[in-house]
Length: 279
Image (cartoon, rainbow, N blue to C red; front, side):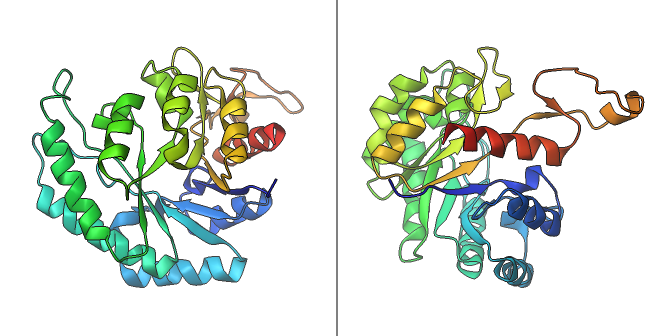
């Protein structure tokens, strides 16, 4: 089986690009799903800033796998879509500079009980975004997420069946947090998933290292690889208690929570280690 390429949301280790590079190299990862850049969201940086980031990543031998953008995280009912479409076009330009071939996106926030009523508008806006990306060489990849149209597996399937050019990202923890059985979701979506977000959760929705929750990450990861899946993104989302060290006496270690970490770097490393154990 081909070796899996592992990327990460390294802004969970550090808000600064230099710190992200250090975290990626420390854990032996291939590169970034890039989301936060020196205090800015990736979709908001300038082309010049993108060139600066690209130089640093190239020098470190790291790649940008996907744009961890917020595209599609707007209300279908109240927000300005033309302006959001311009943000997408700018993010596609940034992707070209950074060498990213994927762009993570969402299917719009919809009020409770209104998803079916808003389906037509969702499909219209999604179609316009896919049209904007045509010819860019960048695949739009839809992530399941709480509160959006594509929060549950059946609506993710609806989007993927309606738009053959759309790719799927499968996030087990997000499905757990929506009350969706992840194995049932995987059975429905497995042939349209481009890559996984490696994230697990407990029944109460708390995110934990992969393999420690009810997201069936080991089984899904194994099947993904058997289907020829080649890349995943680690998304830690683990609890960090920065004040922990200040409460400890020299030589002591205080256990507050089994999966609570003393720093962002420690949480990031724990998430990477959990995936490596599954492999």
